Image (tube, rainbow, N blue to C red):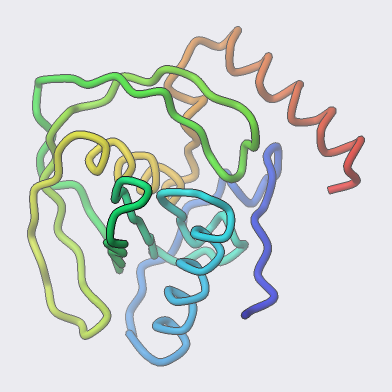
Length: 171
């Protein structure tokens, strides 16, 4: 297991834009593996590299129902090509914003292009919770958080709670 740790908001590193991955090597593959381990250990369904302090365009995700077979997905340089006009609303949370949740409306179907671990270019459509999760994680790569999609009042309330949590837990 690596020594990566999930960064808790507010933290300026979560607001930075991640860099394109130009070389898929053992370091990148190892990082994706470590990110999946951290995500599963933290009971998350998605994790972006900036959340563990690495500013690279890498995402892992597994939206399989609890108790069913795991379905880990790894994305290198994911890019949204198309968004449906149809919207879905999900209660979103985030490993970088522990215990905080809010309803967020996003396009319900997205088409994404990305590379897999072998450098194969893939174009795929995602819907439902997978579409929401992937949009949430790609937001992280662009320095955005799910609270950027809700009212300023709710966002400020959540950030204040997180500041208190960080102080009391010394994070």
